[in-house]
Amino acid sequence: MLIEQPTFWEITAYLLEGFWATVKIFGMTLLTALPLGLIIAFGSMSKFSPLKWFVKGLVWIIRGTPLMLQLIVIYYGPGILFDVQVGSTYHETATYITFTINYACYFSEIYRGGIEGIPRGQYEACQVLGMNKIQTFFRVVLMQVVKRIIPPMSNEIITLVKDTAIARIIGYYEIIHNAQYYAKNVGLIWPLFYTGAFYLVFCGLLTILFSRIEKKLSYYKV
Image (cartoon, rainbow, N blue to C red; front, side):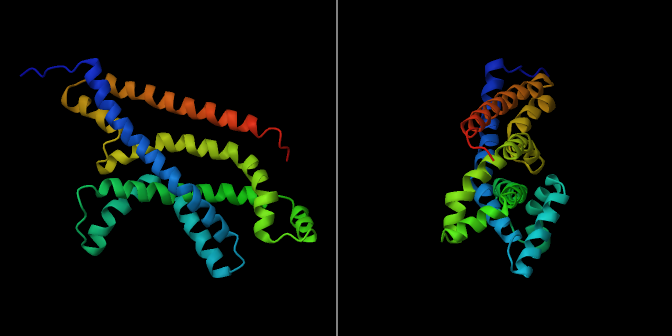
């Protein structure tokens, strides 16, 4: 039995549906992981030892295990451990949760490195001027930290674009999942290569964006 071959535009439309799912993972992860990462960074620098070592342990576990393993645990864990029936859309929720926790831990280390890299003398100078810790952070430290973390942060964010492909292992219909449909059911392999164009354009735009941000901040020498 002959299977009708889809047109280039039909394939493009289907891949665009998957690419939108990819963009949603990317957007939701940034929206939640960037602020959560800052909270985790403050926790890892806390003077309260139990909190500090708990946070450091969490970051160590997340950074030391594969994202794919974390995704599988979050997706299958509730059903296996607690006999909880998850809904048909749980693959999407599990993806957002996993990516948020994973990238928040990576971002936290970038934040921590940026904050701890500020010379101690600047904090002491702010104390002499009568500034409290909040004023010191927002008026003196923040822009220096932003300048320091842009390069490593841009690398992690571009990596996030490519890591979204891992979500397909739990049935999340992102772009590569949709391309695999044609390889399995129609015998077309080129849609898989075609997905590379979507990633290249997306990563290229992000590269340009971060390059401009770095130039904007280049006046601020640290």
